[in-house]
Length: 249
Image (cartoon, rainbow, N blue to C red):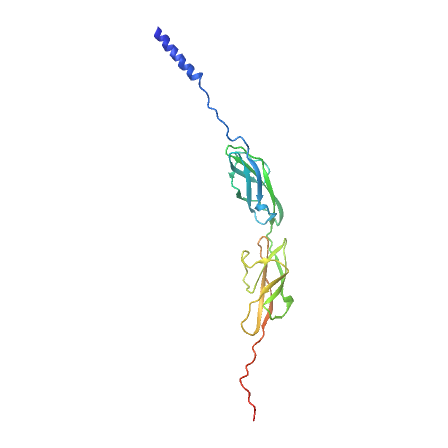
């Protein structure tokens, strides 16, 4: 009987120790603060772009670490678990929506940030004008030295004229009639009057020179060419050589 009592008491103590003295582990939130959205800048703060591909410069802070960002042209706050979140970086690529017709279109990009625990910041935004331009400039004319027929100098002045639905930005002048690429070296800022140097000549004579000019706009659209010609005259500066003289005696 005493053995039974002892066994009962030991079982009761074991039961009490497993139920009365167990404590659940305490989980502490080590990331209590929301990320702070500092700024977003499109193309380093540029006013305009002719491309739908832009670069976003991002800035955000968090007490533990910013891990993701969400960029959109919609101001609607995204879900923390939704699609579209990307790994956070201070410089990221973004594509703004294209348009169907030429014109200037204001675009705004909204950005949110979140940390590893899923806490999301408020939003920041920046705006830029998207200039849609698929129309090439019209090359009107080029005139060498105001239409002169001849020149004795390789340094001449080109009078240029071109139009565009938005703006002519650059011109390319050459004595070659080969069409340049939009990214070729040799393009210069458009002006109605520009200096040009003709190719020289080694000997005296009259040398026809033709200058071809193309124009482009900010979107890289190229015009056809216009041209003008002038005679480059190299004067004979060599004096005759007197070999002898005979006097009848």
